[in-house]
Image 1: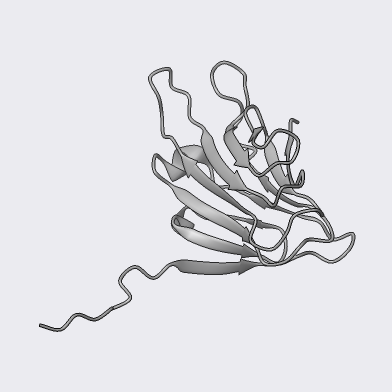
Image 2: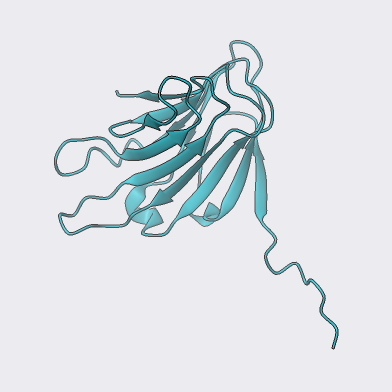
Length: 153
């Protein structure tokens, strides 16, 4: 009996080099982030939570250390959840200050200029919960510097 790989588990990969809005059809994509040139920071906007639905996910991976911030933001149309808190919750491993930064109550996350090749943010949707809240959950890994910054707007 012979076994061979048909590449049935091949990952979908897309390069991002400037500001963009992620589409619901991009579920399961690994986004490789190109480092912006100096003073050319950019923002990547997640799809609408309701449209994405439960189980939607993607991963953002740095291709090189950025010279300007690369920001991941919740869709402006999502608004806060029912208790008025923000939409991005989770944890980042490898943060120097506390060996794991709590990312609860963030509106956006940013790879700053200390971030290194391979740092990543994994994002997934919870769908609606019992109290009708819906969140973008994140798990992230950085290089030990304070490279993933949350921003409350």
